[in-house]
Length: 317
Ligand code: PEP
Ligand code: MG
Image 1 (cartoon, rainbow, N blue to C red):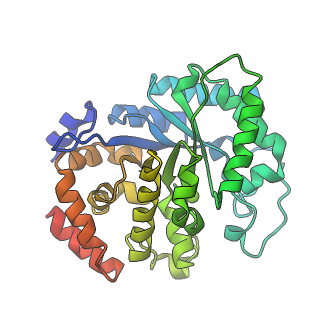
Image 2: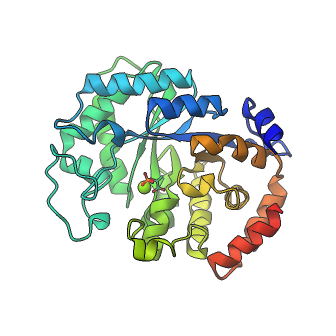
C-alpha cells in the first residue's frame, strides 16, 4: 500500500477507467502547502484564510493578505488555489470585529454573513486575492452560503473590485455547500456559480442539528448519514445540470471509507488533509467509475450511517 501510494504521489489522478478526479489539499498555512506539494496534491481546494485574521488586534491589510496568499500560491507553483473568503463568527472572535455574543453562534453571524456586516473587510480580501500573480491560479469560494441572493451580492463586489484591475480574465467564483438550503437548491446556485464544493463538516452539523463543537453530541455526528449522502447526490445532480463540477472539501474527502461513495455520487474533486493525499490518490486510482456508482447507489439505500459504514468496509476490503 505504501509503495503504491508513493508511486501515485507525483501523478495526475485518474480512476482505473481513466475518469479524471482531482485530488487537492486543504491548507491553512505555508507549511501546509509545502506538505501538500511533497505529498503530490494537485492544488488546493480550500485555503482556510482564518489563520491570517485570528490572534491579532487589527485586520490584516490588503498588502499583508496579498503577501500571504502569494506565498502559498508560489509554493503551489501554478497549481489551482481555491481561496475561501473569511469564515469566522461568534465562536471564533477577532477583537477588531465586534460581533455581539450570540446564543447560537452556529446559526448567527458567521461565514459570508460577517463579510456582509463588514463590507470593507470583504472588499479588501477580494482585492488581495485579485492581486496574486498569476491571477488565473486563484479561484474564490464563498463559505456558509444559504441562497443565490448571497452569491449575487458577492459577485457584485467581485465585479466592482475587479474593474480596478487591468485584466480581462474573470476570476472563478464558487460556493461552499454547507447548509441544507444550499444542497437542496444546488441547481439554482450552479446556474450562477462556477463550481460547488461541499463542506461536509458543517453540512452534517446542520443536517443533523448537532453542534460539531458540542462534546455531548459530536460523537454521534457521521457525515455518512443517509441525509447527508442524499444531499451530496442532490448537489452533484444540480451542479451537473449546469455543467459545473462538484467537489468535497469537508472531512469526508479525507475518509477512505467515504471516498468511493463520493466519487460514485458524481464528485470530481476531493480536497483532503495534506497528510492523507497519497492514500486518497492511490484509492481513487484503484476504482472504476462504474463500480463506484454501483457502490454509491447501494449506499443510498442504507437506513443508517452505521449501515453505510459497514457496506463501505465491505467494499474496500
Ligand atoms: C466544512 O464545513 O466541511 C468545511 C470544509 O469548512 P470548515 O471545516 O472550515 O468549517
Ligand atoms: Mg464549514
